[in-house]
Length: 94
Image (cartoon, rainbow, N blue to C red):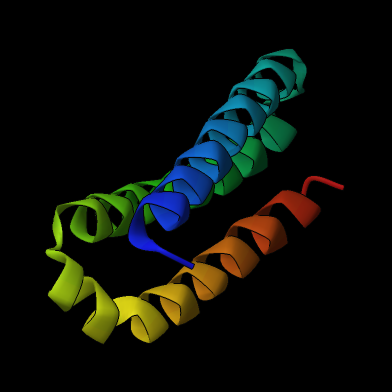
């Protein structure tokens, strides 16, 4: 996958995560106090994962083509890990 396609894919996933975070925040506002605390913890974890993904996306976007070729495997592995962590956090809302 070339760098631009990869960055576009990352951006689309981050946009989806932002929408899900917004949805969970709306649910948290409606929840009882003790449940709201759990929602807020999960939302904070999801935000951290999203922020890390945004950082990686910027790093990939700003890399030269030669650097991208060298970094591609590591980026893809890190992205997969972040995607899994975000998905795991979402499942806890289940």
